[in-house]
Image (cartoon, rainbow, N blue to C red; front, side, top):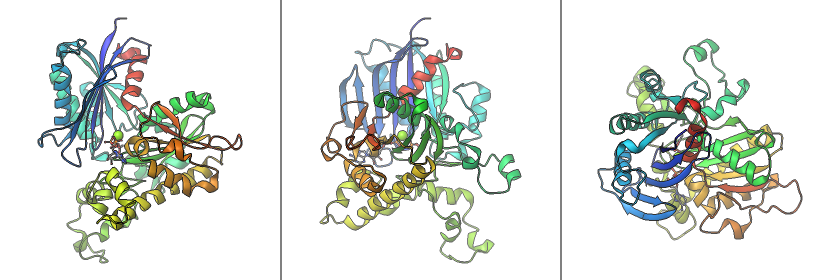
Length: 427
Ligand SMILES: Nc1ncnc2c1ncn2[C@@H]1O[C@H](COP(=O)(O)OP(=O)(O)O)[C@@H](O)[C@H]1O
Ligand SMILES: CC(=O)OP(=O)(O)O
Ligand SMILES: [Mg+2]
């Protein structure tokens, strides 16, 4: 079959990343270019563009109007099409396949061709991933119009977690209501966890089905995943991505009753006290008005990390609280998953914007879990630039059984492109 040009689009809650590949059916995709707009929740957002492994635009501030995922994608598409040195995309007709990261895929267990029917089905899930699904579908619509000859494919964050066993994915609520309303743990960041599993297995010289990991995807949204024999066993996000760890604007898990006490007349659980707090308002508070933004005023964890370690910084106290709180919540999941995996853990993996860039966060987490045998290697952990996809930052010596500590530069776009290249349905 003929080679095709594939665009892989990852709309996160604070960024849009697009990678361009040359793909052939059944072969590993070859990356040609990668462009991203990041910092959508801490304007001004910035553009980065890499072609053939060379940086063309390092970090360019983008105009104020680009403050949402759809506009960010339009800018990225324009950047690719206007680049005279990217002969593979001279016109919009050159793009053969577009794959889209859709965070909530409901019960789908494999990538889907986007037809009217799949689109409608996904639209019904929008409320279950309020910072993601509608934005991604906006980009799907844009692609259908702007790239009329391309095939659009949806890849799902929830797919990797379809292996979570029933006693872990079930919420202890009325089973009939749970069934009819599809209320269960779905889990997200699965495209990243699939990439992490394969990369860590390769690095450690193991087959994925022999590998147990505790993986942390820490970006604007943050989650933890227990991976048993190469498959998702448990994860911290739930029915929606708000559960589990806190994030840039998300609360993470809180007492479910907290939302009823958020109004000014707290403590009175009468209809009057909650009448203004509809589910949509509560969801807005937990998804958009909480997390690092609420605690510190910024969604940039890089700023939080540096202020947390500078006692003279005017916001030191609030920033240190956010940092310590994150470390506490992360270690809580690690401890729980370590036991759930019965201590059979090959490695702890850090990934995502924060996991890959914050040596300080990694050191603080690993220090707190030293009782489980994990130990950081200061020299490797503090290295500024990660060179390889997988890097060891823990002390691997000192006994064969010591669990490893790895950083994986996760690549959700590659993982989606790989899945599309392998699936005859899309060719
Ligand atoms: N040097 C750094 N130290 C700590 N955190 C960082 C650093 N650089 C970026 N980050 C964090 O990474 C996050 C972006 O992660 P990423 O996984 O790309 O996000 P998204 O959830 O949009 O996919 C930003 O919110 C920022 O807080
Ligand atoms: C699921 C999720 O929270 O994704 P992101 O971190 O990319 O916003
Ligand atoms: Mg992301």
